[in-house]
Length: 462
Ligand code: ADQ
Image (cartoon, rainbow, N blue to C red):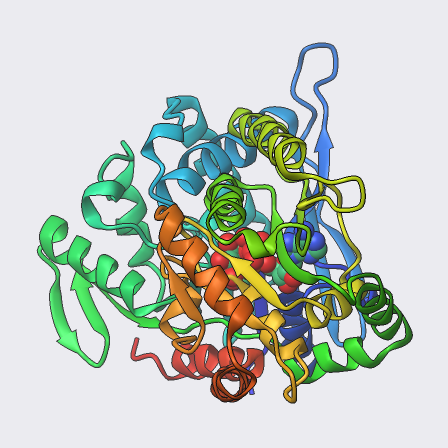
């Protein structure tokens, strides 16, 4: 079996057991095959006397059969590549938010510089038959930069965020360069069939691509395989977390505290793609239209701080503070508050208990590549008395989770109706829907995902 080289913006600390599902799954594949995980260390080298700090060396750490290799970034590179092009151009555009994108040409130059830096630092570590798996929108040009240095390895790319339709993509001044760069990979993976369709529309309409069948596309003088590989979760590992001491304690505490109430739950990063203000409006509509929920239903919304150095994130924060304050002021009672809004991180080991104690989960992004919270909620339920998932049709997860209550998050009334339906759904219907949902997340779990992507990469025709 070939060695695996994973490249992502950040690496995970594989010695910490509490890392997220993706880190665990990639860590497992790396341990099995042996390999390298390469990325930014998270450290920024500040300018010295107004001059950029000299380029740092690669830092190596061993964890079993895996080598973690990281580089530091200079201040200007970090600002342009990470805060700038990745988070202020690609993230908003890939989530269809042209209104929030900041097309500053200095960002694109820094993005390219860091991808070149990654290629230069990675190349000497590679063996001829290594499989290289690059993750996400931060690193779209990496294969092209590696090829320019003579790398002939198989290189795959997985896009964790949505692929927008061609005319949205075309708003990025460098769109042609980005799409051409994708063809330097041997396999390009998307979260959903809708994303794959957007890719194929783009390359056919903008680049006159030939569709060769078997998922192969020819354009820009190269052939690449493109496919949908919906990311899954590690269901059994999550259940183990639910059974652990903290998981059980959390569940019992929440169950006891809300024994006479209905608990609704939202768990997100505080990000404008997650549809949080729309969700609060829908919850307000629920209280207005179905008064039996007053003094009864409580929404716990956890929104962990994210990318606070980007301006749009300050706006969403202020908006949430004001919306949640208003609804609590208008509807709250001395012994009941409609919303508990928590703008802090919550430890992963407490999530399963919280999910299990909730009657309804609200996963209502305006756009989302997949959304793993939806899958984690299903995994954590008691099959004998499961809670119900209200899911945005604009999350990648909606292609697989047809038995959730699918909603349009822009439709406040429709979403409120779906929440009411979830709160009042008869036990048998909940059980049937949950059984189907659980089957789906078990079949296409995280191990299926890594296996199917790596099989496609190993088998890709050169
Ligand atoms: P994210 O946008 O970060 O990821 P998501 O898939 O919802 O979104 O969450 C990833 C992980 O973070 C989950 O395991 C979840 O439990 C955890 N998480 C989220 N909010 C949390 C909070 N407030 N507190 C604690 N943990 C929290 C990107 C894409 C997604 C895609 C993933 C994986 O935007 O669409 O599903 O990558 O491909």
